[in-house]
Length: 619
Image (cartoon, rainbow, N blue to C red; front, top):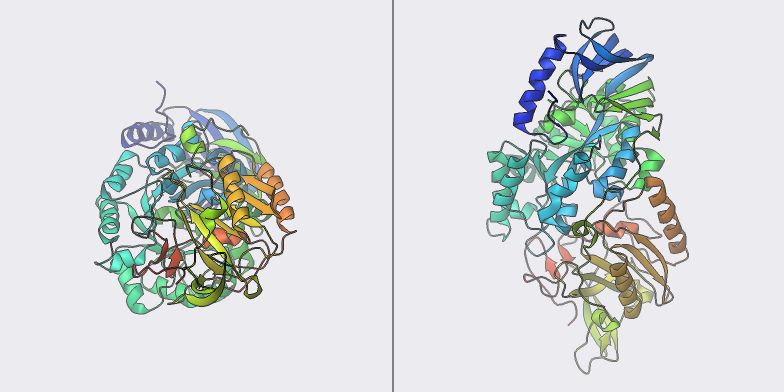
């Protein structure tokens, strides 16, 4: 009698599978595979078990013991006497969309680097097509992918009460998601802190509805505590039931969070200011995980996936065994999925990373679901795209061709100058800047000499082509008749565009519609580069190497443009091609004044997301 398919987890099949595993473990039913290794890291106790064999049935481990000790029948044996086995690495918080690859090609990229499971922080695609979000993330797994994607429905769908997107999640939706399958595990990063603490906030009822549904279904409420430093704020954060935070930028922030019981997820770009002191002062690391959050395929090809996060921690002086725990059992326990992943132990998926050197985390082979999936970094699985339906491909519903006039900002009649609200990227100030700008032919103009250009957000969901526009400082092209636009605009993922002329902005956005999303660069009035993200406007169904080749060509074209730069609040914001602008549309704490695509709550788009106050962009 064949076993149930355990690609998508459900309780009924889980019982049948585990009844079978019991009999295999006792040697009463035959096993499929024995993997003999020099030693196994038992991550629960942080001890090395020498000369072991891992007995696999189907996709799961049935038995672990000394080599040659299993008394049952095994169809096949493989032996790696000189290698050390550690569990498949996992991501406690990652947006696969930020790799810009669809899940089948994400698997080909990260599994050879040791990643066999990911908790997908799914408010990116969910904002594009909320009703189809679960189906999207299950599709590759249903078709046999060895990468296990545990779905975390996003709290930020939409991100704030002043935004609209392609999805809307509340109590009913979240309860349905968590009831649908065991692989939907949490409420992803609660980002809209004002809607949690302030009963007067219009998002209060929706946010607490999602949090309540998560608690009711025994899920985990994940956090995003950026900017929360005061002990009153941190105490309130924890008291709400939020369990974790990955927005940790300094050692004191990490220490204060750990002291209050917050599961602390560290990203590599802050290791330099956190890791040395944490190593010196933290005796118990079980409440720490390493996480990627956002990393493109280009950066992953260069640095690695979770293996990079672990390897870098080891280089800072953390014991390899602890570092491995922070990417295996610690995140699995926190997400309450350690019965399936996070360790080499019976009942878990047979996800095994074979190392030829532990201190450098040098990977020789990776098994996932009991199958050999890589030889070094060479992927042994398929490289064929899935047949993605139109609901995943055709998501650019701007609805009309845009014109230069759509980006013009009209002046009051008879005025030669106007006062203008001005922001800069990562502008977290209590108030926006006010600048005096010239008027020509009845329209308020940019001031390139003072690094002031025009920025716009275009709704891409309703089909009415609504445009919000204002002036930003220090982030656009200096060259005339030049514009850059993208459909990657965290977290609503409407279209943003920055440009030195209204005509160039219209041309860029119109071309972006034609290619179904991604990046478009117009230079001196002509489209000179584009990067196609035809899946959700966020991802491409291509291997990582193909993505990187095309992205490098785009970077080369962008390097010919002169870009403004004015230092912002985010230390990741750098001079040159302003790729980081895809995060400048965030509306979570510590953002205050922002521009969103026109919505019923903010028709002109300019709103303070902490208070709900609105303001004219010129007066």
